[in-house]
Length: 551
Image 1 (cartoon, rainbow, N blue to C red):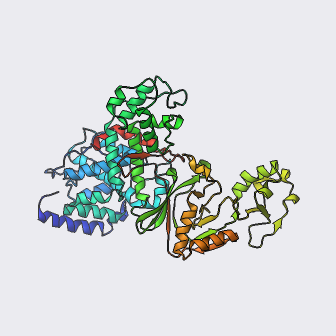
Image 2 (image 1 turned 180 degrees about the vertical axis):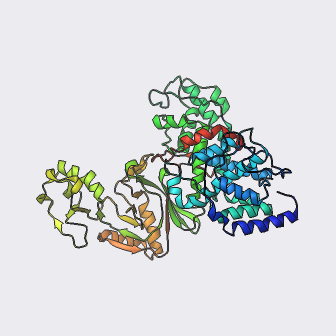
Image 3 (image 1 turned 90 degrees about the vertical axis):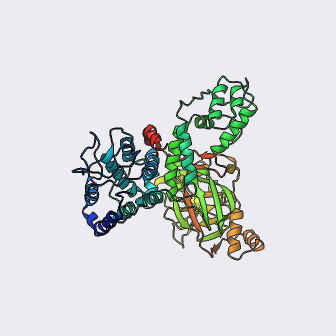
């Protein structure tokens, strides 16, 4: 117990309520910057009270939340807040995970201080509290700001956490429920425990990682001097038994090829056993680097729906869609997402309707950048692909004869017309469109070209999501709207554009997760197609220190 006596607890509980709920925090402002050192042992109650929270701090350590700490500890009569080793260890592990993600350099600073042997006693307690204030601000605000904090390259600004959250923490300290409070700050997702365990396992392998150097692709049956290095990588990755790693043949074949196929599958690559650039690059990613990727994606779990009851979820870098009904996945489909220069956005919305035989109003950007150059080269392009030129974007727009337009003189940057592609087999949206309200004009749709779904890297669209099993998804949604297969077929054959409202609310989530753990317990990694993982380069600076706190 913090102070050990029930009488003291009652006194502090009353004090905490009157201070924090009474609005003292409104006068607080975050100033200066400094983190804390490792607290491997609980801090006993101080017999000789320190004169201030900065008394005894080692040189170079200056609390980030000095004003808030002064208020906290003065009302605790300068007694420590971190009196239980279990609290310290649990918090330090969460703090280390956030530092490894690289989203805010201050967390790396706190982790560095918390592993500084100079930091002891009450000073260590102060730094832990300083870090807790920063961590609480992150947890309290990440749901609202996570799309920028966890998918951008600019660190967010630290600020004071909500007064209500500080009050909850202090009440938990007084009541001896600190461990439960700290646990409540972790991501509330079923993946968290598995990813946390995988991260710790990867951090434990801190030996130098071998470098696989190949001048060209290595195919099954080829000979290569790099085979022993390849075998070592696969053996350390748990994909090749030690006896197979020791007895490497002169040719790339047998169990070595099968191990590479398993490796490729775990990275979302085509599992053909051919070691090209993408496979080679992933083989050269060390466990320590993978730990930082897991750390970043652990924080992203805070934005990812868990235990979806009914809805559609799309993991953009996994090129996958899942449709859930009553908590059960009833459809899984490959998808094609936006290319890096036309990213598919993250979003949480809901399905409004299913469109059968949809026309396609070509977005202005695509008209200017993609279609006009093709028309200039081939004046018959519009007719061959079923496009109509319309005078404007209004409902009563007039059709324009494309032959009346001097295409070589058209300025793509100021093209005043709208292009619309008629419904049909060759329509770019296919036979189905799934409308979802959003400000980016993004939707899910079918496609006439399903060959592209055979590719392993499918960031190919202009932002919208193409669904391989669009017909199956439409059938399930239309069935809920009272349509049977005969009615669907008849409507498609007639070719008329038909809008079918969705009866029940179907949530739609687009998220971006590049690392997780499979149901079989195997860590999975995916190519970062939008360069959203760049923050882990900063997180890598915390590897050695964070590893100490995660032991």
